[in-house]
Image (cartoon, rainbow, N blue to C red; front, side, top):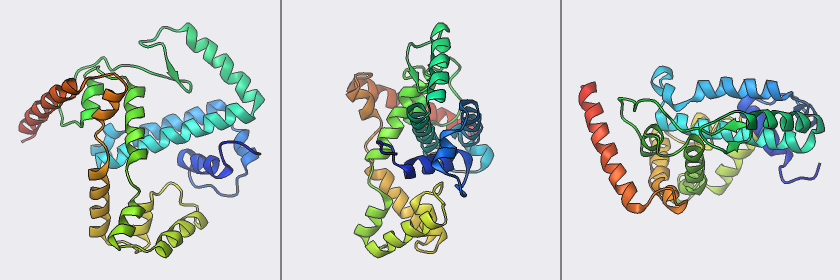
Length: 253
């Protein structure tokens, strides 16, 4: 099966949505009904949605990353199914025709997932700049996901930072990746898996994540490059966000 998507990419995507891969073949994955894939995705999307970080007791940024990873996995599986399963492709084409008949707030769709702009009230809690733009109705859901994805892809890998700082050696990184592959723990991020296996201390883990975040490009640059906003617009919106978060902090206190 020669294609742009490697078998390991498909297996990794499957493990993110359905759980650890245990003895499943690529052919079996290619036979997944679209309804089953969509149902599993929606369930996982609800579990990992960033807005639930207070309920599940996790860091908001961690859930943001999990949610982005989930959407990338869903897109990977959809691409694989559309390309290699004629029956699925036929069904998906029929679904797309039905979706085009429906009225939506935008004309574009993202791999069978309709794009939309938020129309509700601005949440009365502290927000990140991307969330503020979305909840203010300035950028669509798909645009926000695209921006977060690009931001994640452009920041340096934790392993690269750990190597530069002398915390991990190349042999350590190779061993961590190999062990994670053997145990099929693809849903665990490199830094989390390295920490669980004793390669990193709690302080080193937090320091590496903090450094990684500090090196990533501001998300506002994405909207400027795409012509969605101007630089002066971003500056003004950042000030509005600061005011919003200040008011939210006062109410919490």
